[in-house]
Image (cartoon, rainbow, N blue to C red):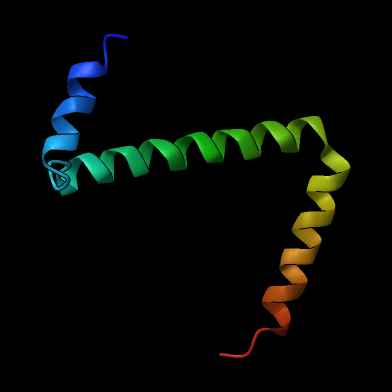
Length: 64
């Protein structure tokens, strides 16, 4: 439980999280998400191909 002091500090001031910290956490989340997608595509190539084709069809039929 080494993260207790941080949690207590956040409870004291709800706006303690800066924009930079939020962007850093979001960037990390998006990197993890991309990594998970790549792993899923390697493990399930047929599903990945179907998803690619479906996305391409959606993009072709999309009106600007």
